[in-house]
Image (tube, rainbow, N blue to C red; front, side):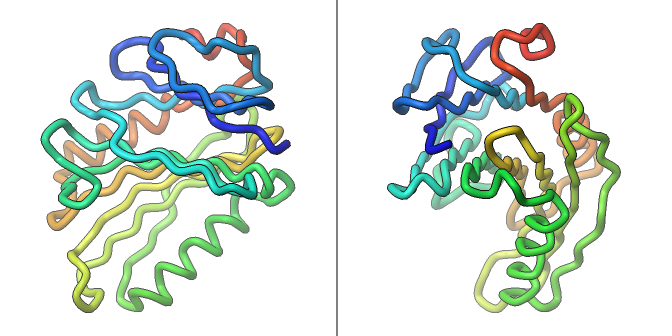
Amino acid sequence: LGGRVALARRRAGTIQFALLPVALALVTGTALAQSPQALVVPTPLEFALAWSHDKPDGSLQMREFVPQGQTVETWQQMITVQHFPKLSQVEPQALLGRWTQSVLAACPKAQISREPQSPVNGHPAMRVYVHVTDCGARAPESILAVVIKGADAMHMVQHAWRPTPPTREQLQAARVSFDRVRLCATGDAACAR
């Protein structure tokens, strides 16, 4: 589907994205149009949308969220949500493999480890943790990422920290947040919880 992403802040600390077949909608409250699937991503209360981008060819919809007081240039924490409608037939391990290979190509000393990940509402999913301490002039960065295969798109959610890696508590909070990500049919009770 060549759909767009609708963003709706359903309640404090939760972002809902729905693939819409018609147009981009940025809404506060609930989604305005019926859509095939909704990706619900729990976020800390202090995070707000800082940047969004939709590729004209429909291959990518991306949203970046940072804590209040930070920007996409000066962030120390960022949550990124990406939708890849043209990759709906790709398996999570293939997308995650390509992504981690690109990380290693840019930063050969990156440490990448698989993390436990259950299916998300019955959809195949995989999770990794990436820690980059040395990557040329780039600041050190740590990323917890999950990839979920939806019916109409592949989805990737990342929680990143720089220049300092997350504390154990921050990483555990991000893991718990990722455990609460849901991908379900719009209107499904699982998305309302």
